[in-house]
Image 1 (cartoon, rainbow, N blue to C red):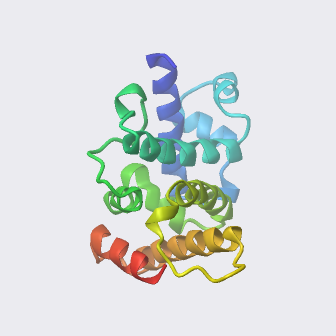
Image 2 (cartoon, one colour):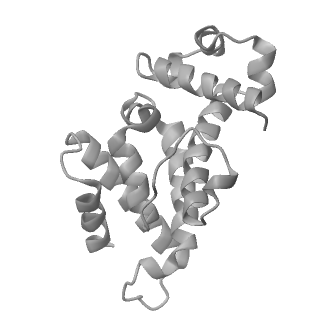
Length: 183
């Protein structure tokens, strides 16, 4: 992706997130995104098929950043997120949420955020599956791995929701500690 394309994408993401801070996801139109980003309709559709796809790509950019920094590939990719990543991918994600990078908290707090949570959980699932040793539990005989992964993903998503609902008062390190103590 060249610099011009990257700037256009970033402009669309920024406009979309700004709109999410003011309106319900379901009430935002592509026309509003286009107007806010100051781009043409064909430019929007050359980058994103739909508003749902835009949300999916925003989530993918976050998780791609986390995966790339974990793999030390962040110098090779450009993201709307940047930081000095800690060793733990889950702590890394919590740190971005605490800093509220690109108004991520808006996505958690917005009404009708089911689409965001669907993509968020799908990407969390990839993280959990990639790091099975991180979750050292006494395995119950015949417990399906998919059940275990689903439980961890759901627990993390609900932990994040609880943390946000309570004003993100605790540090990302403390929330990470809470999370790992119960999974």
